[in-house]
Length: 499
Ligand SMILES: NC(=O)C1=CN([C@@H]2O[C@H](COP(=O)(O)OP(=O)(O)OC[C@H]3O[C@@H](n4cnc5c(N)ncnc54)[C@H](OP(=O)(O)O)[C@@H]3O)[C@@H](O)[C@H]2O)[C@@H](O)CC1
Ligand SMILES: Nc1ncnc2c1ncn2[C@@H]1O[C@H](COP(=O)(O)OP(=O)(O)O)[C@@H](O)[C@H]1O
Ligand SMILES: [K+]
View 1: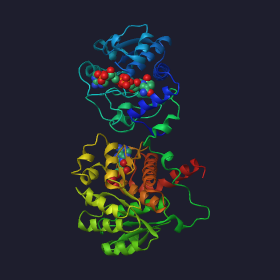
View 2: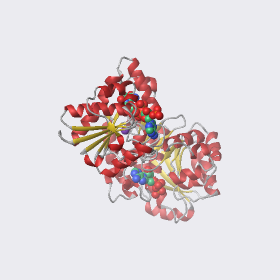
View 3: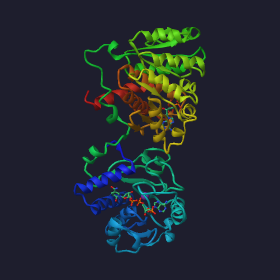
View 4: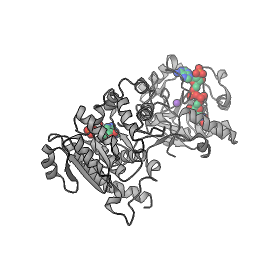
């Protein structure tokens, strides 16, 4: 159920279902009935339901919902953008079975209704709203009346999560068969409200032909790759993560990362520290080890020991030539690499230089974990990435250009692999927006890479487990809590695998 379909893929699912014997009107009937069910959960029979319909099949779903609601005793008024005669195909058939009036959309007064069904535009939204449609959306949003949106809130682009001119602010959304990217990407996610995915009779088997490349992030994405340790295993079988520290005034971030790397299961974790910070780290760390590394050559010497199989650089490391050299050293070693924060900003506007270094050792995993600001700096000058139509498209383009797994962070973190796979995360909490939260994610990623989880799955697992830990703590969360919340999160995760 975690596949996410683009509007084009959804149309293909529809086509394949019909080629396999499903009928268009039957699909539309189930879609409209699912919308009516949502209205019934919200308001009792007898309530005033206003259905606003557009000129395509989204409007067709609205006609079905109107018919079902009227039959269940609701007082239904239906308003249509355009004329009834202009409706085509399944929508025309659905309209023919609606015995009530279809009044002009300009007359719709949503403030007078108990609930609005928004069936103006769905997957077929082709341009920014204007004129009558725009005015109707503005009236709906000003009314304060609860809204059940059909497929997507009208005006929301289902592929990008962006608003085209204006969009309905829905109380809930009923979509069909699978989620679309716009339900998960902001601002779309907020405009949808809770999203219900209705089964309308499209068989699962259509997915084998469509092979969707996008998923909602969760254990279905990474569960096969991240398993509990083997019964007869030992710490050396769970890898050794190295976290590179900056100077004495910047030791907290790498320590947060190191602790998370250990908590998520790396067998050993070492902080590589410059001399001036050694004593600070030594005093603050117990299970995590400390080794001296003043120069990039020192780092290279530590990484020459191939048992140190994952390295994280960036948190509080400082921006500049020295950090670039450390990044180059890490990328030339045999270790898997996570780059965050200053490690990425040190390549500001030079994504190609970073891609060149990555390309020297294509066999090992590299994950970058920028927030939006770091991403924009790194990709400055790359119009193909900067002007991408969505966060999802931008992360994918960057992953392909850099040859790395990109974790583009935020409330709707996107993880993208160079081969086109992508996952959108949705289990977080705004309480994660706190100092050191990203450093913790970097550490979790390194800890999973150390355990030989492949880069894409490691990134997806780290993002999901980090968000899960954050959501469990919620109000009052500080970054130190994240590592401490992991044991309970991991226990449940492994229990879910039957481990
Ligand atoms: N696929 C499936 O499996 C199933 C799909 N189902 C349903 O079908 C929906 C998709 O239907 P759809 O393709 O007919 O598109 P839809 O969203 O109704 O809009 C197209 C119409 O709007 C118009 N229009 C567009 N933008 C506009 C604008 N800014 N301002 C004004 N007009 C604008 C556009 O006009 P045109 O661009 O041609 O001028 C055209 O007339 C989908 O969301 C789901 O609800 C379900 O029944 C279950 C099975
Ligand atoms: N509103 C939010 N909802 C969910 N997750 C969030 C939200 N804001 C931030 N986060 C998450 O918190 C982390 C913040 O990372 P970052 O900005 O690098 O923090 P820092 O640099 O302080 O460590 C990221 O994993 C991000 O996805
Ligand atoms: K809609």
